[in-house]
Length: 133
Image (cartoon, helix red, strand yellow):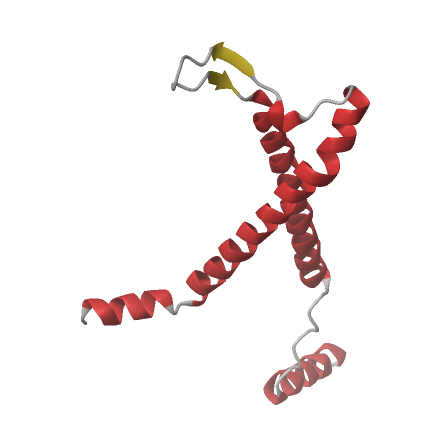
């Protein structure tokens, strides 16, 4: 089997396609959450704290000298990224929890007992007749 045929067989398996779709949707979801945190959640929190804009929070390690920019530790961006992560992690947790509860409901439904074959019915009747005698 040629390398291209092997790659095609690999790429067309259901798990790989599902994973690719998940990655694309996850990337888009991550952008939505980042915008939600940066544009909706953090401004009111910054206002409550005293007009702080989290993306601007930084500690200057070394001042700018001439053309060389200042060296800063941007902990405000880190705080926003942590909030992004927590929201995404919670959303993924809720999705997994919902899927697990659906699987439990499917597993909890008892399967109907199989219908006995004609031979089993006949053998049961013979057994019952023998017990009576």
